Structures are given as C-alpha cells and as structure tokens.
Image (cartoon, rainbow, N blue to C red):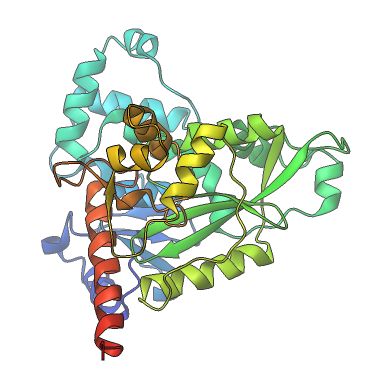
Length: 360
C-alpha cells in the first residue's frame, strides 16, 4: 500500500536525496510525473517530494500503475538477475498487457516451475504475480488517478484514446457507444489502512469492493461485467465518496456497520450465505459448519465455504469473521495477515464500547 505516515515519508525522502544504500529493499519510490518507480539509490534527478509516493515492496508499486525505472532497475534486487529472470522481465515489459500461459514459457525455452521458483526467490513474488500486477497496474492507472470519462469520448468510442482502450478495456469490458443494452458501472480507487482497494458501483449501489492485490481480482471483475453485460469506466460517484468516509470511520474504530447500499450478484444459495455473514456481530466469529447449521443445511458446509470465498464485497460482507471449526484462522482472499488484523481490530472496538458503557 502507499505509505501515508508523514514522518516516514519525510525520512524516506531524505534517504532518497542522500541515495542511502542502507534502504535498498526497504522502500521503493513512485514518481507521479514520470509514472516510474525506483530504488532509493537511483542516479536520476530527484523529484520534488510532492511528486513522490513510497511503497514497501515492488508489487505495490506495480499495482499502483508505476513501471520499473530503466536506469536503476528496481527489479534487479536483491542480487543480479539470472538470465532466465532477465528474459522474463524483458518479455513482460515488451508486452505488459499479456496474460501468460504455459506455452508462452515454452517459446522462451523456460520451464514454468523455473519461472515461479526464481522469481519468488528474486522478488518475493511469483512471475505470474509480477505479470498480473504489471497488467492490472496499467488498467488501474485511470481508476487511481480519478480520470473521469466525458460523454463525448464515450460516444466517439475513444477513437482518440487508443492507449486507454487497449489497457483498460481488456479487463473492464468493451467501451460503450450509444448502445442502451450495455449497463455502465463506475470504478474508483480507495486507500485504506490495510492497503489500496477498488470499488465498483453504479449511481445507486455498490457491486464490488476488494483489495487490489487480491488473488483472482481480475477474473472477479470480468465475471461481474459479463453477468451484468456491463462496461466499467473510471469515475467517482457520490456513493463511493460515502463509502470512503465509512471505510475511514471503520478503520479508525468509529463505525461497526456499513450503510452503503449494495447489490448482491450470485446464486440464491450464495445470497443466503452472504446474508448470514452480515448477521455475524462485530467482534465475533463463526465457522462454515455453524453457518450451514443456521441455514438448516448442516451437510452443506463446503458449499458455504465456496460461497464465502465468492464474496465480492470485502469488509461489508464480513467473510473475515469465518474461521475453522478448530479455532484456526482459515483462509482469506485478502491475505491471512489482513484477516488477523481485522479480527483484532473489531474485538478492540467491542472492548472499547463495553468499557465506555459498563453494565450496571
């Protein structure tokens, strides 16, 4: 996620100016004016502080729409790139929008397992995660920069914006012309304490809220637009502004229940599961088996687990409150570290309320 703490930003910026090698691998800097991200020791002319964004790892910078600097080569850390990894990085940069398949590795004479193993060792993420982050970063650029799309551009089918059409519509769907058969949804970028999130809505309801680094997010977005026969444009509606305020209040411990109107897209069974999830009180947890029993389908706990994983409204439909029957955290699409933080955060909210209003 973008680092927002002013003291840390001031410190990192000074280290950037000093080209301090002790901070190699500790942070990366994204330069808004150029769209690139660099290592702390990059020899290029230093940007103004207001044009810098700092990230704790390369994947976050990629998802935030920055591309690797060709001078300092931030993806060459922590050691010199192996020939295979170098070849893969160059292949991605030659066509960053490409979705990779096993046959593509064959064309480069590289085994997929080699790509996964060497990339993980080099960058802390697999090659697929890297190529996905680069691809999504391009599509998310317009969302993150809050670039609205004016009607004239839509009606002309973006003939003057080939770059936008190619980078954005691969994930967000064909751009609408004057056809009334296509439903238009809007996407916005929201920064939170646990990382960047993408929200998709129309004028009245929220359809998707996810962390941008969630595995499978690209497919989630595609499924959503196909089910609704929709195109998704980068624009911030008032409903998203309300959502952002509620998220800020939630993460600061001041809000327990979201009020933003939502639209559930799924089967009747999935909707039943999601409605049960929203009944779990803040500060409490349940298991898939207990959920199945409440739904009077005690043998359907695996189906309940699948429906839980298909939730597209993170936090609002609190699938993070479902744990294993044995007490273990279980899985979470946003990552186990986030799930653990959310549960502790909600327990602290309940504790504060109890202390503020003691019994008797």
